[in-house]
Amino acid sequence: MGTRIRAQARTRRTTMAAVAAVAAVLGLAPGCTISDADGGAGEAPAGGGRVLAVKIDNVGPARPQTGLDAADVVYAEQVEAGLSRLMAVYADRLPPVIGPVRSARETDLELLRQFDDPALAFSGAQSKLLPLISDAPLRPLSPGKAPGDAYFRSGAKPAPHNLFLRPKALKADVGEGGLESTGFVFGPRPEGGTPEREHTVRFPAARFTFDWSAGQKRYLVSMDGARARTSDGKTLGASTVVVQYVKVRESRFHDRSGNVTPFTETVGSGKARVLRDGRAYEARWERSSPDDGTEFTTADGSGELPFAKGQVWVVYAKE
Image (cartoon, rainbow, N blue to C red; front, top):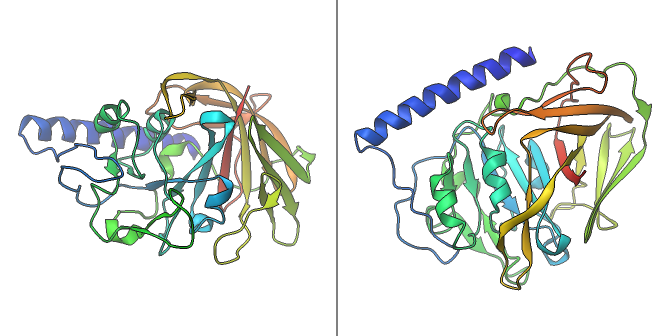
């Protein structure tokens, strides 16, 4: 089934690329000028994509986050100074509010290429990164590109951790099938594995801990030593946790303080550890090109490793 889904996804991407090329020749392509968090010129794109991805702040003043429990997939990546940032992907349903929303990174552009016409909500980006976002195969929806009522500032948190999104104002086209191009396969728990009640992933200045709850049948999430909850008190948890070991290198970008922005390589292959149903499975991951999803197979190469139905957390750990 997983092979069939990936083949369908590649066919859709080929068709969409052809349509985009024809539209460009005819002068029908929508404007793709990117604006920063303060707004700017450019017409807002009509609608979203098969999925809506939102960059989520993940430092102490930004917590608790809002709407994170409704995401289908949560990616955790390393950013400047060894801190972490999240990218929440919504493919099934949109909560009323999501946030706090923060800026995009170069890593996001490569990661999102696996999706079919995704929309990316973000607060802005470094000026040198803006042309790359403009050229990426996604629909950028920063505050200057979105409808006027989509973003708002909350008085409950200090700036810059107080920018929130009303996703339904974007009219993003999410629905069944949005995750087909990821390479994820969902199914019953496979044989083998070893019992694993707790697992911690450490970044230089951040850490994630996942504790198995048999009663809730999911791994409860803690970040930097504190149980993670949403702004309305819901405990965050994942049915499947993927610790994906990747190369994390320096990019040519940096923040205002001079800290170099890390680039996480999500194309290639390597080891992974998959947690589900209270058990850990050694795995291999492979993503042949940016347009492909990531295949997860058993460490011995005997077959695909299915995920449990529910929210998936993918944490990119340095190999």
